[in-house]
Length: 235
Image: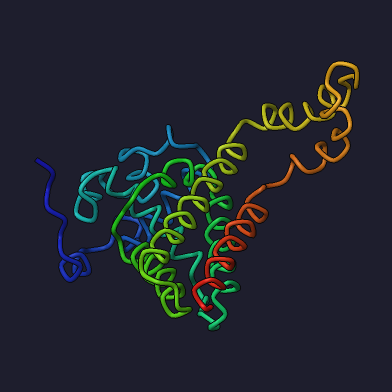
């Protein structure tokens, strides 16, 4: 049975570590994010995290029920970073586009953490705030509830799916990433029109386009579809 998490007010009364560090959930998450960046998911363990914080690994369980609970907190922190400073403008399409791009950018800025957390549902404060914000933008714009939920679902899953896909590429070893990128020039660009006419004609564009994320395009297509639905609602 997992140990109960110690209430926040009791954590604050904890003495500093030997190095003078006062532990907090935020500090642990920040340190975990740094370790993921430097060592990948395999390098994030309670023992190594304890060493990085100059604390006994068991101390971490005063803040989190286990490493999986910490994983959820990391994902929630990324969403919090994404929404920091954002405020709705009242223009529903611009607002959703801004939120989507912010969340995607926050995840790909931490690719190892994104791979670990993009598919998870934490139910934590920042995630709930983001979900509330997206639904509120849609409902305030006048979308009927079933349509708002449908668009919300597509919006969230598209954003996180592209975040996971793009982060997975960035999390590859440098040599593997470079080899994948070079494939568009070394293989696709050299295919003859006699055997692969469509690839051959598109090769110059593919060599450039496929090295960038398709998320902004997919997001705009999704919002175009939602705008069409919104126009029909207003009629």
